[in-house]
Length: 263
Image 1 (spheres, rainbow, N blue to C red):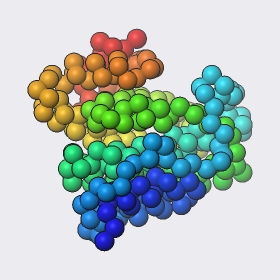
Image 2 (image 1 turned 90 degrees about the horizontal axis):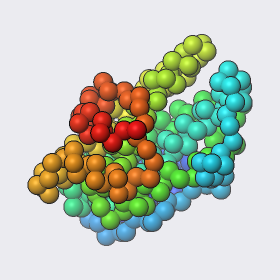
Image 3 (image 1 turned 120 degrees about the vertical axis):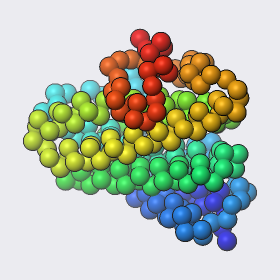
Image 4 (image 1 turned 60 degrees about the vertical axis):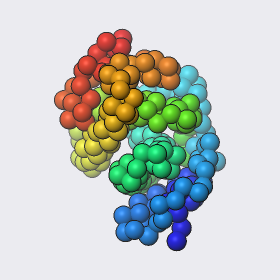
């Protein structure tokens, strides 16, 4: 029987986007069915395999999208969202494979579920791009999304603090605004995709918060102060309002965590 670690590593080292989606969902399904052994005999790669396209650029070199109503801007929006979800597949897989042995079976189950969700999100967004006459890889993409994972590869609490509780929580803040714009433009199909993603991401942030609270309990530290210290150490950006307080609270992320460190 293949080990869960080996299956996760194989998915991480799958470069083709469609094949990676299939691999992530297959690992989650095989784990759920009890077809993978509880063994961590394969190390996670420092960086997953990615396709040659899109070209990855630093944030300050990313081209401007232009006005929202233009065709170019619409394609750029959906391409950006697709790239975020593509990298999110690897973030969830790496979380389960790198820290699962120490954190336990439920942790692995939850983050493999996240990986399968992210694969589904990417597939929806890739099809959306194709309906607009484009495809994933047609435009440059943000090259720094994996940095947070790499910099926290030796500390599960830091990874949880930065990836689900900062980066994914930021998605809870910005997605409703994007949803309003897409709805106002008459794109009902796009609005349904974004609504599905928002609902799922609340649960994903909730998983991160749940396990971070366990880490804080095990360390016998106040969760909010521990989170702030880890964010200040490992997150290079800034936490900027406005915040979607209701969605964050639904994910277990109260204002006590982020209010004092917001700019």
